[in-house]
Image 1 (cartoon, rainbow, N blue to C red):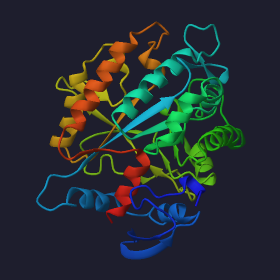
Image 2 (image 1 turned 180 degrees about the vertical axis):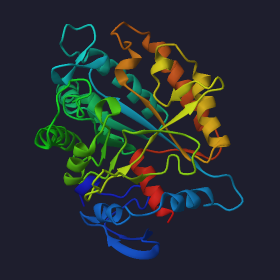
Image 3 (image 1 turned 90 degrees about the vertical axis):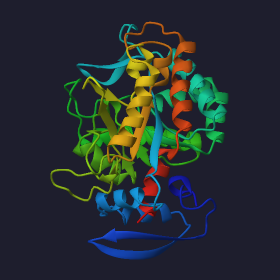
Length: 358
């Protein structure tokens, strides 16, 4: 099948074949067989939306009796314009230092560097593409996109079309559902056309997602959003859960959180590598964060996230040494990949694994 990627990563390599999964609905165990047609993955995930996160957590924690729990890391790459920022009076973004314009020079350089790190080390990742950025790079540098497309361990999600401020917190423009849908459809279509696979995951620009955006994502048959952050340490930290709105009106979307942490000085840390790339934190601090979450909390999942342009320029648009950026990122990833019971997966694989444990 071709719908939503054609295969259910984490369950089987080749479709069509028969897939059996166990899931909980209203505390009742259901064994259901799905065939590998275009709607299999969609049906599989939709029917699991009511599962309890505690059940998933217990399954992952005890999946191999007598052994330590498996810990998952997802590398997520937000591909968008250089040093982007929102401005009042317009829903899209501009690049810092470019007099109200958008630059894609640094994102192109950084994307090549990130791609080389991931490909050479055979690491899975989820790319969240801003549609405009992908459209321009696929035309100006088709070989870059071709190599990324050929690596099947990469997942391709959506990051909007022009880095929209969907909530209007920065732009002060309240976007109506029709306008939100217009931008999301534009971004979705570019990703689908470029990679011959429809995106199923979404991350909102500025990581700000609201009820109207979630409703549109559900209408467009996305499977998950990964925009919201949570503090690690709770029983279900990192476990996918059903996205909810105040009216809870049929939002068939999973929420896969970005997990946060506090360092030894009780200062907040995020899996986003902003401070690493601007030399405000050291690589070892990020290693310590992941291992601290893994070894001292009940959390079983962590995202390490970055923007390709941030390897080349800082948030003000000033040049960064790209070689230092690459070395520091590689130090973190290599150290964590050597750790026992850690598995690096894309977000779609992680979601599928959680469901498969039930």
